Image (tube, rainbow, N blue to C red):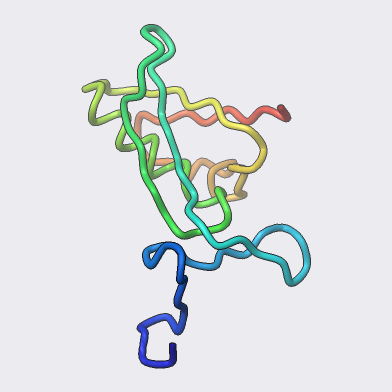
Length: 104
């Protein structure tokens, strides 16, 4: 275990990693999947699999991927509050991106 780059080994899935969750000292071994869906056609246009437990830093990346796939100049991303970050709220979103956060 100490020889592995991140000092983690999963016997059931070698690619999964321990990710911190919102509970104190708790976590889950697995993946975090981000998906962008075209609301007009209800099709997945982009996806990303990470080992990051929090969604907070994921919205800009998945929105950028969706924007590229759709070939649009402007993209409106709607996300739940798990994606909220002060950087996104303060306008550090990049050109052509608008984030709207929902409390769903």
